[in-house]
Amino acid sequence: MEGGGQKTTLVQSVYQVLMQGLDEGVFRPGQRIKAAELAKRLGLSRAPVREALHVLAGQGLVEMLPDKGAILRVLSLHDVIEIYDIIGRVAAVGVVGAARRINEGDNAKRIRAAMDKIHAAGREPPSYRFYLALNDLHYVFNDIAERPYVSYLMRLLNVEYWNRYLAANIDLVRHMPKYVDNYRRMTEAVLAGDWRAGEAMIISHCEWSVSLLLETTQGEVRI
Image 1 (cartoon, rainbow, N blue to C red):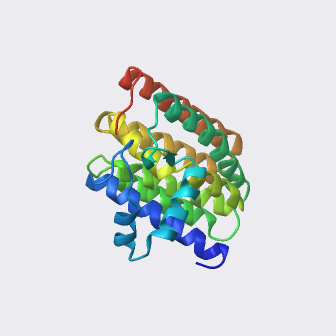
Image 2 (cartoon, helix red, strand yellow):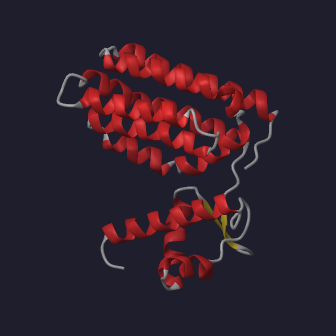
């Protein structure tokens, strides 16, 4: 395992296997992660997998405990809301930047295509995958805005793990249409070059989402 690029790729691979195992019920928050099982899934030896787990511990996804080794971090309601507060402010940077560059190249076309995918995801059975479509629009905003560190910070916050908490605790059957409408309004503001309206919309959306968590969970979250 030589070079930062290879290490980053390995960490991403371990992350994706953990997310897949979470969806399959193989891994659960608070449960011990067996490096041998991860290594077998990836076709690797245990040593690089353990190294990747230590990196993920530094990023807050995994906890290293003396008696259990590595476990998937359990997110509290406070954690989930704090991530929303951070992501809202960080994502606003990409929204503003995209609005300011909307008339360049095929930027408008790319944004419309990403919004079309959100509309399509909104017609599917509710799951964490709906949130992945929202993430993808933000990654497009960030790319257009030339703000790669915004995408980096989103990934550093383990956004896909957080998405699974949201899907498990927010009633998407009831609220998915509002999600889609919020993103439609945000997208329309960006397409119009109105960065102030786009910024206000992402902040407002995050505040609304936090209110859903408080309303739905009554102080506890599950996954």
